[in-house]
Amino acid sequence: MAEFDCEETKALVHEYLHNELLPDQQKDITTHLALCDSCEEEYDLEVYLNQVIQRSCDEEPPKKLAEKVLARIKDIQSH
Ligand SMILES: [Zn+2]
Image (cartoon, rainbow, N blue to C red):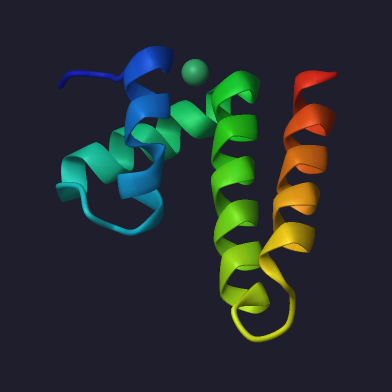
């Protein structure tokens, strides 16, 4: 069974979050995320962006949203 490397995992993290992959792919990425801090951060960021976008649709103006997202990305990159 093929396993995903970091590049592939990060490329598919959006599809993974939205359950758009084959069951085997979902499983492989779950395994990779559990073992790989770098990809887990990428996944956390994707989850976070999703939540911010959903929550902010009726709550926050786009400018404030963009600032929040940028701050979060900087935070992740500084680790
Ligand atoms: Zn990885």
